[in-house]
Image 1: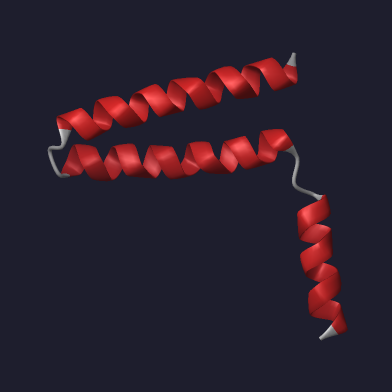
Image 2: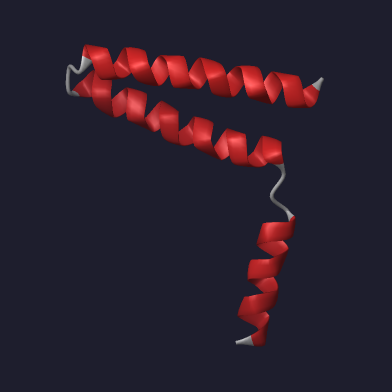
Length: 63
């Protein structure tokens, strides 16, 4: 139990803003792929807008 708690704490400590945004970018990319496969053009466009915002935030954090 203690090892699991320590592992969870280490995982949380290792989270940086860029890492969190990158994980979100991966989820958005998966969403874009799913929406494109389903022919949901409007949803694809919305997700692309979200991806652009995430990329902008990642870029600003890395400057």
